[in-house]
Image (cartoon, rainbow, N blue to C red; front, top):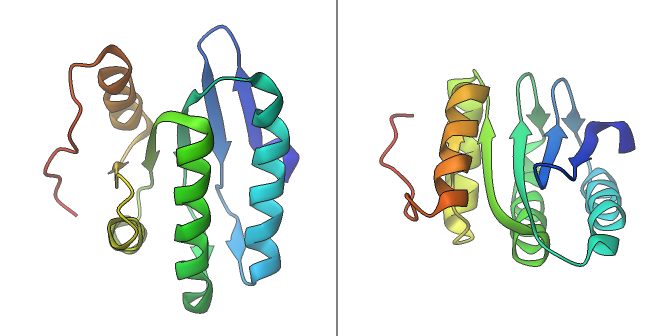
Length: 134
């Protein structure tokens, strides 16, 4: 799991690679929270993050606790975060879960789109979530 999280200090960018990951239990959610917290707590400052959700699956009964965990990580560690997946279904489900938790649902179809949005957040040119097709 720890290999899925990479921090680039030069860019102050935290890469999250959930490609092919399957979350099935609360224990999986807790493991992610622990791994991210251990990686970022020692930095002493917030980072920008980009998450790859390609081929990611999550059990329906875990979605609510996962979204709550994400919201907590965002408030503690992230200056801004974007996500991407080619799956329309996953974009829809993640967007709904994050909106229900009042977390910014920046979810795009490609890494390039997600990184472009993250750069706009970083330089302050786009503070509100764009209206995106699902």
